[in-house]
Length: 590
Ligand SMILES: *[C@@H]1O[C@H](CO)[C@@H](O)[C@H](O)[C@H]1NC(C)=O
Ligand SMILES: *[C@@H]1O[C@H](CO)[C@@H](O)[C@H](O)[C@H]1NC(C)=O
Ligand SMILES: *[C@@H]1O[C@H](CO)[C@@H](O)[C@H](O)[C@H]1NC(C)=O
Ligand SMILES: *[C@@H]1O[C@H](CO)[C@@H](O)[C@H](O)[C@H]1NC(C)=O
Ligand SMILES: *[C@@H]1O[C@H](CO)[C@@H](O)[C@H](O)[C@H]1NC(C)=O
Ligand SMILES: *[C@@H]1O[C@H](CO)[C@@H](O)[C@H](O)[C@H]1NC(C)=O
Ligand SMILES: *[C@@H]1O[C@H](CO)[C@@H](O)[C@H](O)[C@H]1NC(C)=O
Ligand SMILES: *[C@@H]1O[C@H](CO)[C@@H](O)[C@H](O)[C@H]1NC(C)=O
Ligand SMILES: *[C@@H]1O[C@H](CO)[C@@H](O)[C@H](O)[C@H]1NC(C)=O
Ligand SMILES: *[C@@H]1O[C@H](CO)[C@@H](O)[C@H](O)[C@H]1NC(C)=O
Image (cartoon, rainbow, N blue to C red; front, side, top):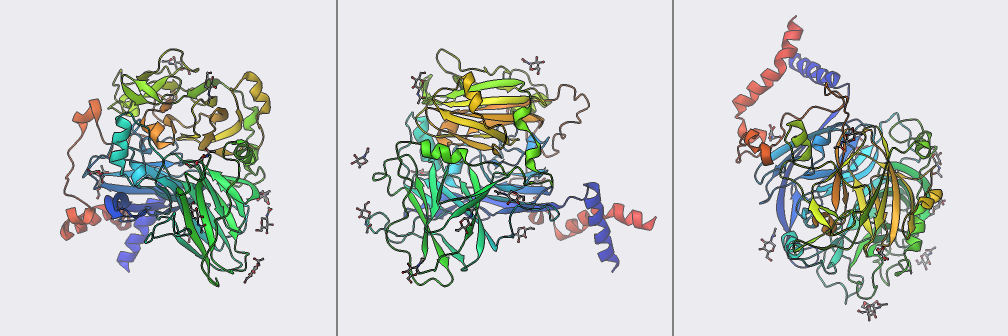
């Protein structure tokens, strides 16, 4: 009884110290496992032997602690796409803020998911590793007291779609290093599995597919993430409507779609009602967009929606994709139709529309343009405004903290540079608490998905052609969707607004893995110049890893240690517990 009481007091004190917000712990082993999703055996990155990795199912304001043990033979980092890491870019897991976790080492991420709800995913951020897996879902639930603009679904599925190569990520990386572009992917995976054998010619025998089991009449929330390399995918379920309800943390105006284009790195959640008569199973399809249908036919993901009263297997042709392969206007109009439900709240009870982003004074304007990758100094590179980013060995944020000079320059140009492109480590000088308008102009030939860490931004508009001052008249200044990943069609622009209220240094990148790997990214620095007492930003974490010019500060790590229990003997565990309990005990004795 006494002991139970001790524990109770101890944990409630912990909760008290952190303002009552819950702690959620994850212990992850990251390693290669052998799978053969498309028939040939390959190594993929698994988390706790799972591919895709486990779902982080958390609630607004939770404190999340994830201990990541890197058992790969190369450095590793995870980034939490769409999770804002408020005042805490230390935990962002990209090279500008964080040193890589060396092979055999572990590092513990610790962050609070403040004021957010929605569907997100985590993924590796280094060395093309996302092409080998290592991703998983983040389901960020609302607190019980916060209303949701739809009834509680009968079930919840997370679905990962993405193009996939049977060549492994080290080979793909070498290919890019040697100046080649990637060819057509070998297929599309759904939840780590290959396509259902809907056509004997296109799908070989012996491929395992994903199946989603449902009951007739029920309504499920499905969260779909494109975690692929570089292919825009059209997602659809045979005979079923997709009622779009949320994207990357914003509740949308609820609309039915028969199919939706999901670009690389984007997340959407839908409500799907099982309103068919189950004369057979139904196809769930993710097919490549804006490509020659016949030559890309095998680059199609097919899973099965199985009703518990189903009368047979799915058969016949797949449901048709939009029939507009060489004209992306339909897709752009569909993207424009996705709007915020301004009378719905999100993580807070007040409606999101009360934030009038369209009326805020813009303090900085940046035109960012990408072109087809070109050779710089003999290497194939992708650039923004003519600068191809090269990550310095010392993370930018650490360089700031320890006064290491000359690591980067704060001079990113606000317009495309004329003249030959170059390699550099140039950063946007963001004005903290400013309001920035960014016009993303895609001068290349494929859809690019741009993602900003640390924020969600308002998508104000997109159109074909070159952006001009007049383009502002077409902006949606009222119910544009707030998200963290937007598509920019080839030969077109997308304009976004960002309120730079989250202190830190934040990555803006293309999520198209090949262009990202080749340097199509930059950082925005938003530091409070008046923060002499270091109160705006959270302090540097105690377990921070050092590298680059700061590597002599790094203490060695015991490479054989895999978990606490293997380091600590039972006796020292008891000792550790006593140390933890000592303050409580002394309180009780007072
Ligand atoms: C990738 O394949 C090559 C052989 O083609 C092999 O040498 C390499 O070890 C593989 N890498 C991984 C991570 O499986
Ligand atoms: C996720 O968390 C929510 C809220 O705590 C809970 O209702 C739900 O059952 C959980 N889902 C899974 C799959 O564990
Ligand atoms: C590595 O994991 C151990 C627990 O297994 C933890 O005590 C330690 O702080 C972790 N190291 C870092 C750098 O986070
Ligand atoms: C918007 O949200 C409100 C508030 O939850 C809800 O009642 C309404 O049905 C939603 N409207 C649409 C079109 O999604
Ligand atoms: C299977 O796909 C091939 C190649 O696209 C096509 O020619 C054939 O008609 C398809 N078979 C069926 C039964 O649909
Ligand atoms: C969406 O489609 C379903 C049928 O699948 C229908 O019951 C529902 O009313 C539609 N909702 C809207 C908002 O159009
Ligand atoms: C219901 O199932 C039968 C076969 O069992 C099929 O012929 C019919 O078209 C189905 N009706 C609907 C509305 O799907
Ligand atoms: C699509 O690809 C097929 C097979 O490679 C080719 O025969 C056809 O001409 C192509 N169609 C277009 C419109 O490019
Ligand atoms: C960055 O911008 C601030 C104003 O927001 C200015 O004071 C500072 O000089 C700029 N730094 C550089 C290096 O341009
Ligand atoms: C790229 O820019 C050039 C020069 O302005 C222009 O001629 C070309 O049409 C543009 N291409 C695309 C795809 O935007």
